[in-house]
Image 1 (cartoon, one colour):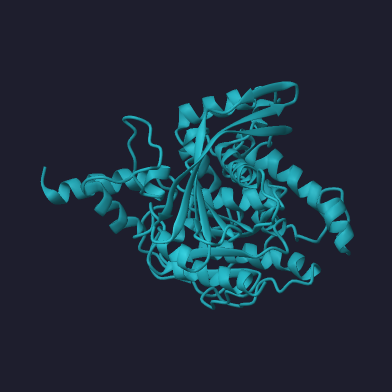
Image 2 (cartoon, helix red, strand yellow):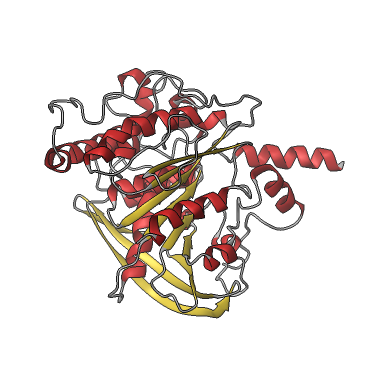
Length: 422
């Protein structure tokens, strides 16, 4: 096969596995489109408009969480327990100054009266030497742990593949950016942050048939079928499991940042909305089912995402394929549930499939809730004004879908603005 033919085949395969399509269109840098609705503090279902923080936390938050589970993501477990099967130190000086540890984990969960458990999965953690309480960036990617933290001591099942290896590695990083599989771990450590990663497909596979079977097995006691949780919710739960493991036998407080790109940008947002232990979120190019509004949007529609990835969401989300106007809730409500904690929404101008404009309008829609808390909220009137110190920070760069060299410096600037000032 000629070299260019191989390149086309590999790019096509990689693109089919992402939630973005390559496009020559450009996102408008001015807000464009109707406001998010229903208003975050306005009337919602049978509730009157919210006029106080007490009404928000006591009435509106529970109603929004119920609506998000019932209509989009499916239900989280009624209860669960994480078991640490093993915990070892792999390297005292990894990645130029980090203590590398590995956890072997399994979780038991209950839906209704039915109890089940996950497959065994692993978490790898690297912490700056001498800074055991450094803020932890919780990372999920579509690549296995041994690609995220490429270290020979990281456990890798015999015969397991990965994202890297051979010519595909160069093609993948060319298409989706330098940091699509492996974050700049040395840079993260040097800035004073720890990082932890799991490969969520170890317990909730990112494949249609296998994923649906695993999700059904874990939620066997839940009825009705249409509201079983999807993979996005299961992966969001995975962030909570990471915190549970890190907090065992630890007495001092640590800050946790949920980080995710694309599909895991969706789960990073959902995790923070349902777990108050998450101090901040970096959600990069999360698109439909993430930060971008469902109504009157550009790029990927609800129908297109549920057809392509039926295991990601509750079956109830399919009710709104070609019928987004009937949705009782939208993604600005998801962002509002994170308030007043800082959230960064990353975007790219040519990633119209992920709808940067819809994410900005969602941020505008969530802003009144941040103001209700007395937080700064969104501090820009256009998509291209970078304000990393704002509590809703919106980042847009040139280029397409991926994690490129410009992204991580912006992510760390956002974290510095919020955590160094502590």
